[in-house]
Image (cartoon, rainbow, N blue to C red; front, side):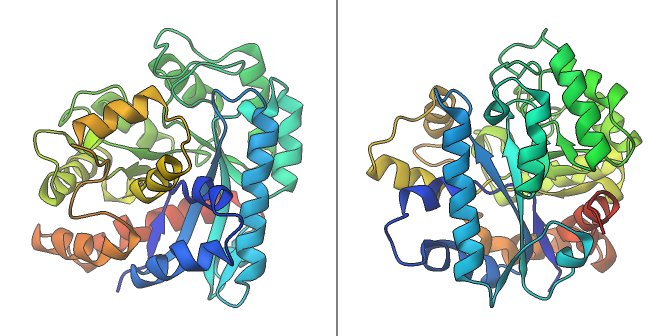
Length: 329
């Protein structure tokens, strides 16, 4: 089976909620990831809109460290190229929005030392570093430019998921080739919502050597056709616009996390509630509910006419190329 690299899974949010359980990562996620053939999983920390974002992110970093420590026979924290090639499941720590820096670009060094290797400047909301999709005219700020420069010096990859069009364009002017990606989004030509990328953005990302992770939620795939076939349409469109070497996976399997948040009476983001309404109470498309369903996606790609080499590229090889080019040795 093809090697899967999944560029976005919010599982750390659930691990924090399940912290009193015995080895919650093994009980909730590890076997699913292994059944699905996932070899590399990017795990974002998320603290947008929180009053104490650094504290919230630190709790998620602790959950990540615990998952690695308790499952060291099967899991490795990949900070370097060598660890990326470990036989165990490689987990990569990332930031979905840099709110935990609390406005200080220099604070990214702390998170780099903790193992963060990818980061997006924003979630939907604008912050001290740049504009999110809720603020389409806001681009990168002076603090954001300083942060982009520092991330480039360290070798961290900038994720442009959730970025405003201005922020997207500004970052592409600043970042070195091979230092940028979009971990999870769809194609706007097939479903015209702000979370999806225009063809112009897809082409610009490819020109900078980036990878686009196609997202498997009803919100981005499209509420009129929330199917696996329509998800493959998004993959096919991205390949046609960017070239197969720039397309990967970033499914964002979030429903299991939301079930835990709802059980814990956590307040959901308005954007999340709207996405659930569009999906009829679920976020993921029905045929791709979690990582264990990835073999179903690979079969669908093959039925659509993608050959072995191209399936391998989309499944994981493109992300591995980008990561190996950026991570320290």
